[in-house]
Image (cartoon, rainbow, N blue to C red; front, top):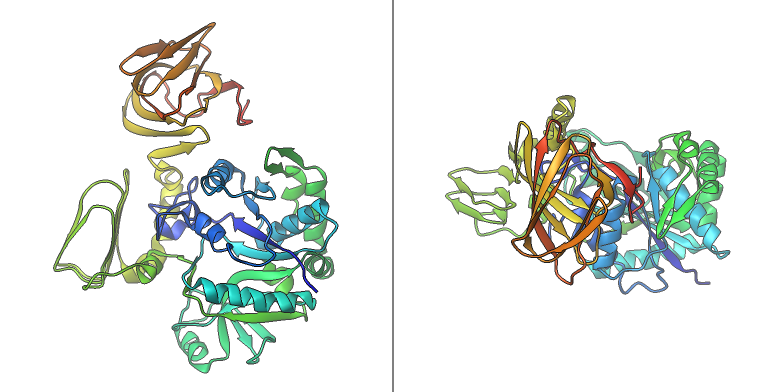
Length: 469
């Protein structure tokens, strides 16, 4: 018997421990943390070569929908849809939404290969072999999880006790150091990876038995769905009633048809900067670097620079991450506590917890170059063929200067084409829009002036991305 495999990519994490690179509106799964491609794209790429694999279904936060769509497009990767969660409800509901959606799309009972979007796996052959082994078990009606063969005593992961074959004896919460050392030495425990393989019908039946309130809420949320291109929008009110619960608590720890397949494939969930150092390529002194970095008498450091030179002299075991608007310096032993800094930023309502200086939009991006009272300067990049919304502002006027490319500017009832070194003025309260009709990126400088310069001073009248007010 053979069944098709439908990958379900869970892309709802926030990655707070990888601040300042990972932030709320552009978290770690969409960033090139360990390579040239993002972790999300690497997750998609490792599906290549699997037998019977279908296009993936992605479950993500609504705020991240355009990043998901853009990164799929960059890989020329088709999908079975992008399910949007306006509120996060953990993994059991996310997988339930995917299972129900796939059930609606096909009468066939598919296997769901559930993969978080932010993992690193180095050995593709071992990964594919584990999936083949799990497929045989899932076809027999088992709920299969993948257990990572532990490389050390780790207190940051949950554990799975097994019988030496495929039977799961119990799931264990994150242990203390002494207990973790016992688990790692015994050979009876795997790390809990958060990856699963099971059939749609088996998972939904388990939900109905062990977490019926999750199944009820997710069914209602999809009953009220509406599609917008590849985006699948839920009935938000119905989904908000769903309990927030992990698939481990909801199903895996309660069911009696659970199996585990060992995975020894160079796995990491890159959950902290220490993990990025562990999976990185080290120099002779044990340093991992990225960007413009200079080292002298420095050992076992991670140094990451987005743009400017970062120099380390006479220091060991540090993490130094320099972005355009924030710099982190921490000892490698303390990087699990980076989330405490993020909590502090959020409590102070600092934008560095949420946004990067360079902010990505479906049409391109903008970078805030300078700002002070009553003015702000941005560098705006518009991708070829893309268009900003028709909008107006109550509190600011804008000057646009084209640096390169061609700008199609609508201001009031007039539309003009501007090229390099040409400029225009958008008065306060005037309806306007900006488009790039050309074949190359449009770069322009925007100078805002006014009493209030917040991003929420936008009234949208028409938008090709569905953001109309």
